[in-house]
Image 1: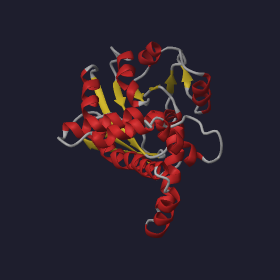
Image 2: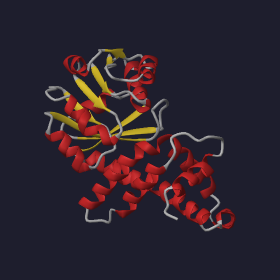
Image 3: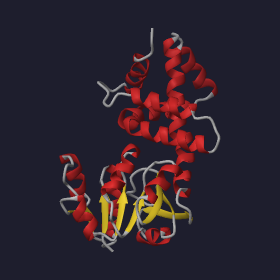
Image 4: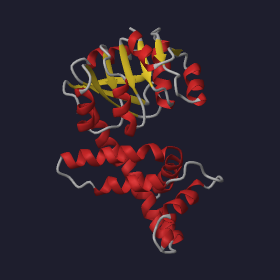
Length: 272
């Protein structure tokens, strides 16, 4: 099979590299993409087909890995594709089904873990009638592909439930620390956490680093989680608030103290 990747960011390039290691040809489209994306694709051994249209024409399977707010637009760019379209983005089951309705052969996917560079770190959950075919492509690669169900949306539900705690919890942790800063009691809270919840120190640092590097990508993901909660009759406020927090997060810290920088950014938009 020939695989097309739309569009190889850090995760997509690692997935493409895993497939290349299996001897599979993997295509991408450089049209309107950045030099940084081109460098990642080249390092992963991907072949530049130039345009999305050419990638679609030559591919048997298309894998979409992009920020969740762009998932529907990327799917529309592949309109008319007759192969298997794998939407592996962090979207709600409802969004996954909507994307599937606009294409013929669709597999729903959700990635949990870092870019797959070594076995045991990353899972790709899949659902849909042809999920087994897609899972077989990754046999023997660092990416552990697992079929969840035959229904489109099931894999996305796994991803949404998982990220609801992982990334949503990180936002809540940052918000709790920020409210302590706003009230002038950060050092007291930090000392109490060190006594009663010592594990939070490491988690807080990780949350700050992730918010700086990836928070902008997580805004749409939190909104998709809120849609998932709403469809289940659950409150959406948790993750709409998390989306707001990640929207405020800085893209790059000015120095090494990313936690202080993130907390200052979160509080910068708070009315006085």
